[in-house]
Amino acid sequence: MNSPDTSTAKAARPEVIAMGLSGLLVRFSDRLDPAANRAALAFRAAVVAERLPGVEETASSLGSVFLRFDPLVTDAGELEVRLGALLAERDWRSADLPSGRRRWTVPAVFDGPQLAEAAALAGLTPAAAVADLTSAPVPVLALGFAPGLPYMGPLGPHWDIPRQTELTPTAPAGAVVVAVRQIIIFPAATPTGWRQVARTGFRAFRPGTAQPFALAPGDEVILQAVTVAELDRLVAEDPAGGGARVEALA
Amino acid sequence: MTGLIVHAAGPGVTVQDLGRAGWLAYGLSRGGAADRLALAEGAALLGQSPALAALEMAGTGGSFGATGPIIIALTGAPMRAMLDGAPLLWNASHALAPGQRLQIGAAMDGVYGYLHVAGGIGVPEVMGSRSAHLSAGIGAPVVAGDVLPAGPATGARAGRMLEPEPRFAGGTLRLVPSAQTGLFSAAERARFEETAFVRDARGNRQGVRLAAGGAGFRPEGALTILSEIILPGDVQVTGDGAPYILLSECQTMGGYPRIGTVVPGDLPRAAQAAPGTVLRFRFVEREAALADHRRRAAGQAALAARVRPMLRDPADMGDLLSYQLIGGVTAGEDAEE
Image (cartoon, rainbow over all chains, first blue to last red; front, side, top):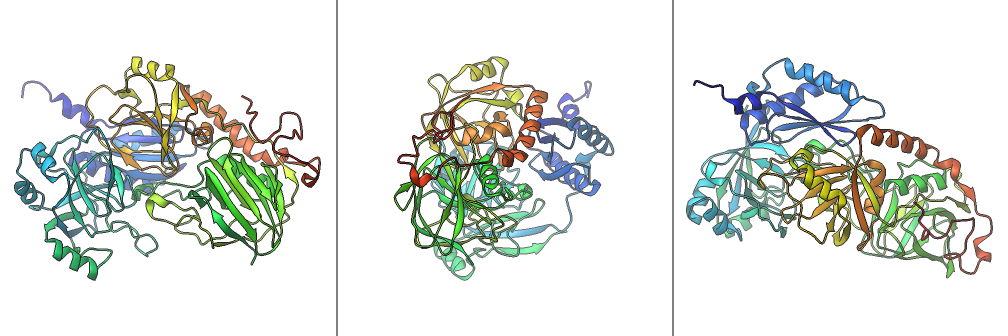
């Protein structure tokens, strides 16, 4: 190449941005990018391990890490300096995924009310969309929006379909929705701008149990197409898991 | 154990404390009282910790009794309250004896009223908090037939009152930047600050929608924004261009851009804006917002010093709701700015 790839150069330099009075965001990318996600997971783990003074809570999202601090105790500028030093320690984008990862196989009925619409936006027939969405495991990139809710991706570039401009009033618990090269299984009924393609009996949030959150970032999920009768049977046998099976990855 | 008997409850009555912080990484928002200042005021009236749980009543209250003698306090959105048919002062503490009936009606101003009991409401903690977080499936609304245990009381007294901070009539909310503020052009941010918004009928503990007459607000670029962490106070602009102020039970992550974040001290006012209330926004410098935050944190600690005895026995007064106990103090309708 004759000229440097400026987009890569920009992506390589994370930004530290204020979020309100008591938050800082370390953004590795503003685009869906598996390397930025790995960077976010590893950097959050490092911030936790480092026990940065004043940091009260951390969370990673698709391509960024959020830190909460008490602005009456901790100076945001000083925290930014420490974060800058930690960021400079290594190339976080080349970090490994966390250990203890698992692969989940989740049975799903692909009768979502917007399957045809979502497939058409992806340039596929509904049958081809189902085959595509069940063909390979998809990584869990982040938990968020609702408790335990997995953001999974990236799907192939043809799935870069926009959110709807109007919200769907309610997608049910277990609904599988797609948008912007990502796929989600809703842990509880929720309004959404994403399009529902399938439903499962999988509950990613189980309040009141010893393990309230089923999934962790770094896990993988593969959807398995089943019939309505099959899903009904699986849910009857396994009300929280909907017949999901889990195996260790690394 | 002494407890609060629920004879009837409106549809939006839940147990709330300061919420459960620390679960953001798992997608669970802090939750807790929509108006945290009301928790602090109730705690000051009862001489107890603001971390204790109270009943939050959205829009309307209910009918309550006690299994033994308890001291209660009423704060937040002023609601019509009666004890065995006699009016009770809001922003005050009262005795509730077994066999008496406490009736709390609709909010006259604001949205969220609070019924505190001395010792706090002692329902079991889930993941470190007693707060119901209904959108997450934690806890349940309070309904008729419930008996809510009160924690051990320590010297709370009836007949105390407190002048509340006015926050039930909308006004200008101060904003500081959030992670996507820069996606909105300076002109769009200026138009945002010039707009008088009306709190829409759509609103709950997750957030409130605002309506404006003119065109919707748009970031520069497409709708496709990478989902990032969301905090209570964030002002999110959805696809139709309408802003939502996100409240304590908000989602933790999302891909709609946020034009700014309401400063913590103004969040109670955002939550207490009833449908139809006019709200405006103004961006302020971080240092100014931080100075105000510091002043308010100290002010909350000093709330207890502002508690005063009621000047007269409420039983002697005909219509407490309109009676001026002390200059400027009524049932909260004379909100002064």
